Image (cartoon, rainbow, N blue to C red; front, side, top):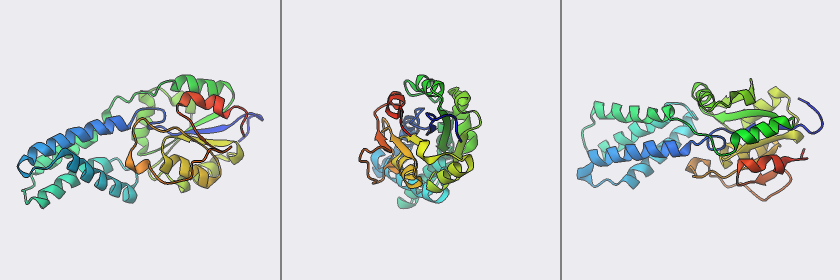
Length: 246
């Protein structure tokens, strides 16, 4: 896809690149841990232990099911089941349903843009670059987030959602769209789902570390600065960093 010599194809991640995400999940996890700590008060179960087990089960679910909508709430129910069995405490169907419903509330959060997102996307578009969104999750949920923060007009029909956000999914987008890889960049906060796949697929990558890390996003890949691998501190630095690059 071509649009002049200076045009770049820019693929932006959504969660914790353009909008806050982890902090909303952290808030719901805190509520869940408070609830289980109360229910299991007689067993001296701590919030840290609850959070550690929930994270373990959540990550296990992602590896099997990807970013399915039910994956996060199910990790709450599975954590509840785990401790009920461990302490031989009778499982209450109403309690289990309550933690499931609590997990789903995260998708109703009022998602907030990171600073300078609109100005940055506007500048990049005015410079003639083609901006696309490439995010992981459930299509309906991710598109609802985009609508909530009014970012849709920047991407038009170029919103790509993958339940398993990996090199294979990215390769499919690059092939389908016919992007020139020498002029294509992935901008995101996740080493696992943004940066590593971009490197594998032979496109440029801009890593912007998130305000809070999620264990799933952290993988060991070489992060030495190069012409095709950049590390920035803010999305506002993207236009200047990519100026004149192909």
